[in-house]
Structures are given as C-alpha cells and as structure tokens.
Amino acid sequence: MLRLEDNAYENGYRDFSDEDVKIINRIKTLRMLDVPIPEIKKLFDGDVQLKTVLEERLSEMNLQAKALDNRMESCRRIIKEGMELADISPEVLSGNREEWSEKLRHIVDEDIDKRFILKGVAFTTAFAVCVKFTVVVLTMGGFSQQDTVFCFFGGMLAILCGFVYIFAEALTKQDFLYAWGKNWGGSGMGGLANSYSILGIGVGLAGTTWPLWGGLLIACIALSAIIRMVLMHVIKEAERQK
Image 1 (cartoon, rainbow, N blue to C red):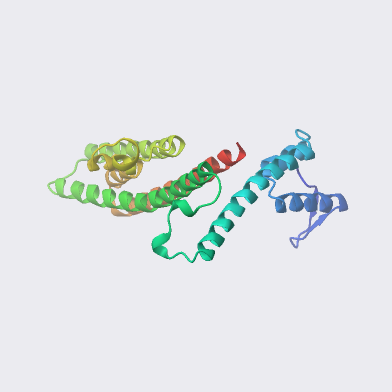
Image 2: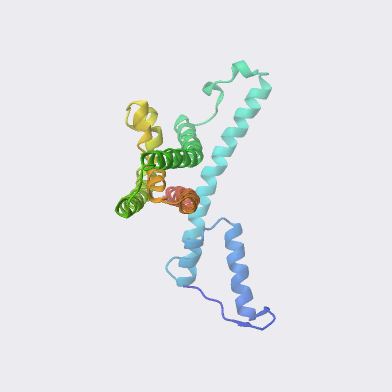
C-alpha cells in the first residue's frame, strides 16, 4: 500500500519531501490518463508494468474513439440529409449494430438503477406509514410489553432481510421492483415483493414509538440509497475492467 511520509505541524500544514511531491504528480498524471486507482496501486506495488497498463488504456480509448466517431458520423448524416424528428430511427446509426445494442443496454441499466432508487424511497416510506398506522389501529385496545418486544425484533429482522435483498438485487440484476416487466413476468402484485417494501414493513413494526419510527425510516432510506449507488458503481467499474 502506497503511503506518503509527511510531517504535520500544529497549524495543520504538512511538509512533504521532494520525492513525495514527485509521487503525487505521477499519480495525478496517471489519473488524468484515466488509469484507475487500483491499477495505479499495482504500479507502485510493482505488480504490473507501466507499458501493460497504458496498452490496456490505449485499447479502451481506441474503442471509445471508435464509438465517438460512429455517433459523430450519425449526427452528420442526420444533418446532411435534412432529416426531421419523424425520420429518426435506428437505421440512421452508423457503425456496428452490436456496439449500439451494448450502449443501449448500459443506458437502460443506468436509468433503471436511478429509478429503482427513487421508487425505492417511495416504497419504503409508503409501507412504513401503512404498517405503522395498522399497528396503531390494532393496538388501540392496549399493547403488552411482550407484544412491543415481538414487534421490535420482528421489524429489525425484516429490516435485515431488506438489506440482504438489496445486495441480491444489485449483484444478480434481478430488480424485484420491476419483476412483472423485466425478469420474472409475474403479476403487478409481484412487484411489491422487493427489498424496499420489506424495509418499510420492518420500519413500521420496529418503530414502536414515533421518534424511533422516524429515525429508522431516515436511516433505512439513506443506507439503502447509499448501498445501491455504491454497488451500482462497483459493478459498472468491474464490467469496465473486463
């Protein structure tokens, strides 16, 4: 692991050596060449050669340049032929059809992931509210200490299951929220069986007091969104590395 030796002063300033400055500049230069952080670490650890890393980057950039050329050529063709909006179709695209199909797949995946997070917030909140008010109505005649403990631990178990499902949905790309339209071909009700609805149910049960309910709801929404976004980035980066 690369570490820079520096002398920290009481005023917060740090004194780096000339060699440290050179290392920082090397890292900055490699990052400007879009060399990923993990590859830079391998370079400094001696696990890979600079030539190998840059050859891989050149290969990636050639593919990106080719894709950019195709998009530019398609735009020029549309302008040159004076096409109107009604004339636009996949036939106007220049280049390899498989490459365009792959780009479309990535665009759709990214759009679905973003909508999944936004709708997930709505699902978590809606289920948390519904379950909480259901519990309140059912316990208006009295709620024993045993019942409170049962609801709390049952809700926490549901929250744990919800977070497990979030990882499963991201890693398998089985977006349960879109079950009826994307993966399983199930009914619309099948779309309710997703990680966020389970989180909402857990919040509604475990939130035995209104302050606890509100805190759990905010925590679950924030954590689920962060986890989903991080996993989305990691998966995309892994696919790019391949």
